[in-house]
Length: 274
Image (cartoon, rainbow, N blue to C red; front, side, top):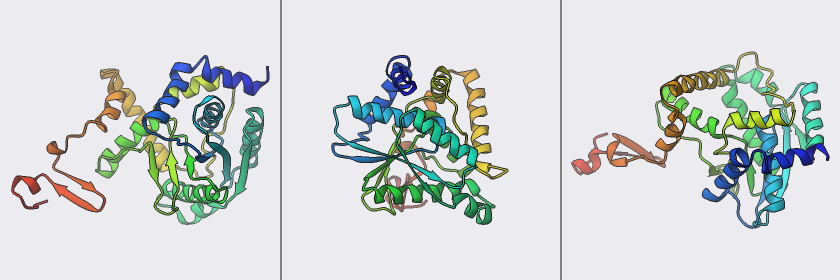
C-alpha cells in the first residue's frame, strides 16, 4: 500500500474518534463548508496543515457536500531545506500544492522588531487571501486546533485584558466575499502528534528566521500554565473553551458589539455610565 493511502486510512480508522469525528463535528456544528464552495487549504508545511489537507481530501472523497479544493503554500522565505521537506511531504502524502514566493520574512526582519509574529501573521493572511481569490476560491482553511483556541483565550485575558476567542469561521474585512474556516477546531494537539508519530512522518516547525519569537514564547507560557491547571482538574481545558459558550451578559460589567460598548448600568439606571 502506498504511503499516502496508509496515512488516509489511519485518519479514518486508527484515529477516527480523536481526529476524524472531531473534524466532521466542527464542519457540521459550525457550518464551515457549503455546497459548491471552493476552498483554499493553506499549507505551511507543519504537522497541523498537512493533517488538515488530508482531512479535507477525505471529506471531499467521502462526504455528502460537493465542493472543490486548492492547496496553497506560501513561501515567506523558508530555508531551502525546509522548502525541500515541504515539497517531499506533499508528494509523499499526495497533496497537489501550489507554491508561491513572497518576501514576508525579509520585511518582518526589517520592520517588525516590536511584534514580529503579529506582523508576520497579518502579512501571511493577506497573501493567502489574495492567492485564494486569484484561484477563484471563496474560503481559506487554516489549521488551528483546540489547543490554539484555548491558548488564545488565555493570552487575550492575561496579556490584552479582554475576553475573546479564536472563532471557527469569520468573514474577511479586506477581501470581499472571502471567509476563513478552521476545521481542526475541536482536535487536540496531542492527537495530531500521535498521528504524526504513528505514520512516522516528519514536518517543519515554524520555519521563521527570527531568533526570538515573542508570541511563540507567550504561547509556551500558556501551554505550561494549562498543564499546571490540569494538575488541579482534568476538566480545565474543556472548561476554558466552554466558558466562551456560556457568557451571561447580565453578569458582566460591560461588553462590546461592533464598535459600540454596552454597560450593565445602561439598563440598571436607563443611562450609560461606563
